[in-house]
Amino acid sequence: MTDTAATTTLRFSRLLLTGAAGGLGRQLRPRLKACCDVLRVSDIAELGKAAPGEELQPCALEDKAAVLSLLEGVQAVVHLGGVSTERPFEEIMGPNIQGLFHLYEGARLHGARRIVFASSNHVTGFRRQDETVLPREPVRPDGYYGLSKAFGENLAQFYFDRWGIETVSLRIGSSFPEPKDRRMLATWLSYDDLERLVVSALTAPAVGHTVVYGMSDNRLTWWDNTSARHVGYRPQDSSEPFRAAVEARQQHIDLADPAALYQGGGFVKMGPF
Image (cartoon, rainbow, N blue to C red):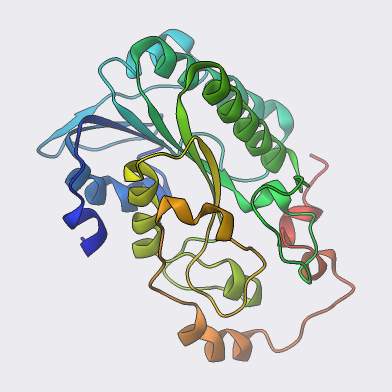
């Protein structure tokens, strides 16, 4: 448990974590307990046994009635659920588009006022690696997955404008124990910084609809989060200690390869399916 979650003074009576069985969900599940009295966790995959202070409520996001029930009694949501990589559009549409609509409808009907939405850097994956992008610049999705996340950001804006439900859309970079390649020297987000980012998004006093890139304090970066500093996120880790090992593993870059040209990396070449 890092200091960020442990010292927050704002606690929710019931916080919902979707996608709790996924890679990032498993990291956040124990860490978010400091933010709430009850953590409701959901996924379509196995969730294991409920820890103290947890409620298990498996749910398919495509099932509107189940999602509406999932939001009952919830004050805030950390939404990681859905397809998390590039797939055929038909596989993405149900959980990432329909499912997100169901989630926001549940929030509207049951009075949840804050959603932390796991968007993705792939919303702007067709921006070049020699550019620096601000969160509010026009999107350039690099595939169906990125397109679904762009839809999610627009949905979040609509639900704030129409019903006042606040959202922080996190354009998460690459959250792993350490960077795997040169691209991740720019996009890496440590698990501790992921926690700091999510807790900041949950507890900032006023966010409206804010878009933030999810990255650690990396020396190399393609994203400028200045416009989102009101969220209060201050990364404390960096990819720099891993640079020598990464460059030794990947000594050459083919600049004719679209994956080396565009910020989305290999996503820009996936499909058609």
